[in-house]
Length: 304
Figure 1: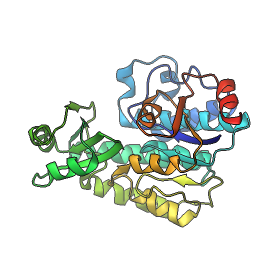
Figure 2 (figure 1 turned 90 degrees about the vertical axis):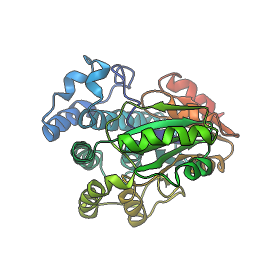
Figure 3 (figure 1 turned 60 degrees about the horizontal axis):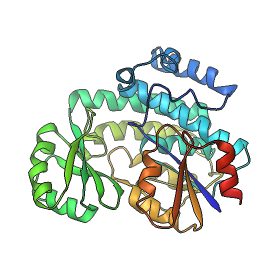
Figure 4 (figure 1 turned 60 degrees about the vertical axis):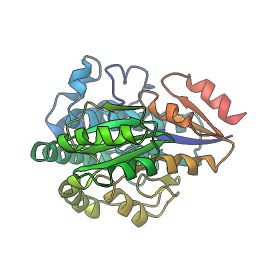
């Protein structure tokens, strides 16, 4: 059985997300480094937080990155060798650290800068997002074709996309999507028009940092959000990551690529079970979450 590690992004965080992470000598110093980079009391939030404490982008992204990375390393440390890695939005940066494209420390610096840039962008360009159930990418895109300030941001699974844009743009999209056959349009608790052209200024700013960062050949192939084809080349990976903040998360295509490794088990390495839940909508993928299945059981499943 082949294994693909997938790393969840913002929205999967919860107050207990570090409680089940296998013990690591690296996490304490990395959390200290994250505090130094952000000026925020992140250590306290790993064990004494309300969900509302974790909604701030500048808090959520560094903590999720470290939680995702710690789970990815734990899976490798128990003997699992993935055929590929992928991460949803922020999770892609953790995937690249686990793939050793850059060090976990260098990735943390990028994540802290990214979270600050995105938070600042939402202050100047407020926005929101909504999940759309019952429409595929083509149908949702067609429904939005005549509307302004709203786009498909995530193609998450067959019959599930996420739209993003200004508050007014997303509100105007609801009747058009429902007329096109959407079963539900659910507002998401976010404050920015993520993965749309409205994030282009922040994306360009982040690209400057990516151009200056050292990227290495990936140890494991990485399936990226804006280029859902396995890649190991450092320059190819860098360019795809530069497009991510203002680009569509092509997760359905990513899962189709994962399915090509049949027989394959998708292992969600991080908090929650959003990605393993999405994978169950795709034939020929077995999916498990590290939060819901013991590591030993996962190893037995993959190696049998």
